[in-house]
Length: 120
Figure (tube, rainbow, N blue to C red):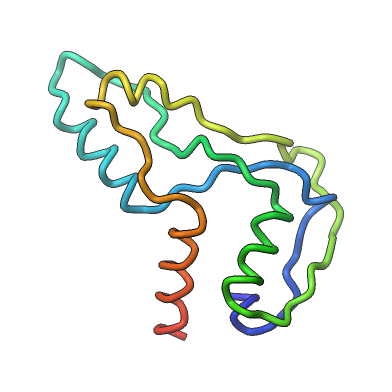
């Protein structure tokens, strides 16, 4: 939303902390497969996207995809903020018929940006 409005984009800390992002369609597919496993397999299982991006990479990608004039503004990093978040999806791949995310970050961002452009 900030990028679409050409507002400053807030990054906490250096922005080098990594996160993994998943498009909702991949999550739904994973959950659907989990429900179809029957009683022979009961979680927990990570249904996520193991692709990692720094918060700076994410912000710059959003700025680029929206042709935004936004600037990146750094704010202090909360002390409890993890430096890395990356799910291990090996169990999901094994138990959910080879499930793995299909929609990568850029494609998911494009779809999300289009949605918000049409609903602002």
